[in-house]
Amino acid sequence: MMSNHHGKEFLGFVATAPPIFLPERLWEFIASPKPKVDSMGRPREAPYGMRKIEAILQEKGFSAAIIDPDYLGKYLDSMKVLLLSHHDYFGYGPPSSEWWSLTGREPLNRRSFIKLMNKSEICKAKEKGVKIIAGGPAAWQWLYEVEKLVEWGVDTVVDGEGEKVVIDLVERALNNDPLPKYVYVGAEDVPSVDEIPIIRGGSVNGLVEIMRGCPRGCKFCSVTLRPLRFIPKNKIVKEIQVNLSAGVKGTILHSEDVLLYHADGVKPRPEPILKLHEEVVRLIGDKGSLAWSHVSLSALKYAEENYKLISRLMHEYLLTESRRFIGVEVGIETGSVRLAKEIMRGKSLPYPIENWPDIVEDTFKIMHENFIIPAATVILGFPGETSDDVVKTIELIERLKGYRSLIIPMFFVPMGSLKRGEWFIREYLKREHVDALLKMYNHSMYWAEDIMRKFYLKSPVNLPVRILLKLFIRYAKRRVNKYVGKIEEYIKQ
Image (cartoon, rainbow, N blue to C red; front, top):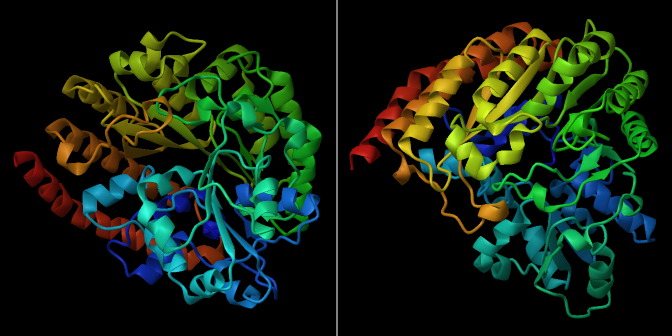
């Protein structure tokens, strides 16, 4: 995670896969190049969630800083508490778990984290009495690796938003007081807007949060368990300025649904969105990069059909000679109306869920026409999923073949209100699942080449990465049949 992925968030997906087709060092170079650091090992860009924890600790008077893992040795004589964060500690999240299941090989993010925790610096720190507190989006994964928690001497795991609880935990650690093994931060314990600090150092690729929580209530998502909070525009502006001062030339507006910033329920309102983007563009200029972390398909469709908001944003504010597209993650999840009613009834609002396939296609058309390139997720193996549900998903993907996009298959991971469900693994694949995987693979490979040719990594400095990605795509095309054959063998068995 301590990488800016060559300034391209989409490349971060590569770090969730095992190093297949290429040597691990080359795979790491493509996915997670080493960050730029100062003489003290402090990275210019660091994961945003870590920046929030760093900021609240500094605000309360602690001597705290984010340090690149390669520089931990410099602090063996001074560190008292070591805090860890990760998006996917052990590769159990999507899409890491899917890659692992399909190939039988551990994903890069798991391999690299285990290497870190087995480093001599960590062992020596524990011998000197350093307390270890682990948190971040993947904190829940420690429940599946309790033996590692004991082996590495992790003292506390914090599951949920940490700004309100971290101060007490650090104080206890410094005073050598007993620490709870596991802390779950529920909806009633999350920080208010006023309690969320402004970051004090650059975030990876300029990511800046504009709201927390989501009102849609999808059963497979843990974010819906948190209350909705809108970050004031003045705080957003200050964080963009922090990034610019750190040399990060661009921003990613982060929310579970960027277009719901100060929305009327699930209906986007043009004024706050336009004012926010006007301010962002003023700060980053015509040459600064800009992306959205996530939008919902229904909000994007509604915004365009009712206000022409997407056309206005793209052509009046965002598109320039150097900013020829913006990227965003969207969730298709399923093409089955029956299944959508069961697991994500609110995802289509303000439209009826019965129209979900049409909503998806209509929105992909809008994005294609306005140079928005989505990385769309599709989840296979939901509890209660039938072969017909998968066929409906295949039919929907076929309808999307004319729209520039990447479609990323994911295997169901028990999270949110479905956390008691069963993991979907390779052994559960049916013929229809293989057909769906191939359909998504062929779609993404076709459009990946188009995106590379027209938009992506065009700067001369990115030429080595561009060449390696082209080689990877060519090699993947030759080898995919081999993996399909292995999967089909499992189905027959």
